[in-house]
Image 1 (cartoon, rainbow, N blue to C red):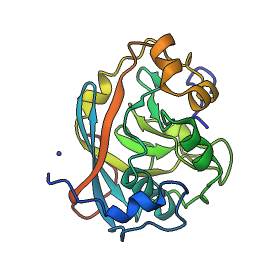
Image 2: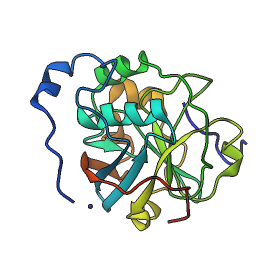
Image 3: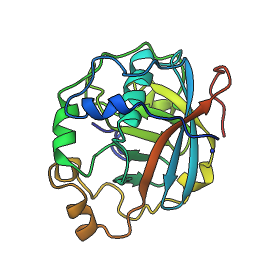
Length: 216
């Protein structure tokens, strides 16, 4: 569920409703709390803070799925398991294999792509049409070649792009998603100890209206 390797072709924290705890054993078909048309997600990472602005207008299904995942704390203690210099930084494999299995089976339909995979945009990974689930990647440069493959941006970095640029990237494509998904952080701690990670991901205060993607 990855964009191809290039060689191979922050804000007040929103209070998360307590009812979310009752829904953590299954993916919700709709979000528990109403999703705004535009929202911020603050990522506290091992290298610093990143603020992302997400737009329903860009990708209705994608924005809602990301809102669901962040709301249930899915991305906490999660590694950037695929970082390729001047290309992408990918995440979305939970430290808990059961969560990966649960969300793997909850695919969302594709949206019509309206934005390019410009530097700083956040897109869902996918392996075929209508297969987006819980893996995403940040574009570390302009990646127009990903556009015709229907990798669909859902938002963009508004603060902290330099943090993403500084992520440890020597492991490249070596970590394999299937091993990460089935073995969790135990595998990554043992084999890739220098890998950077997301400490927490939280929905924060309201964002400005959506605009076209620009370079951060």
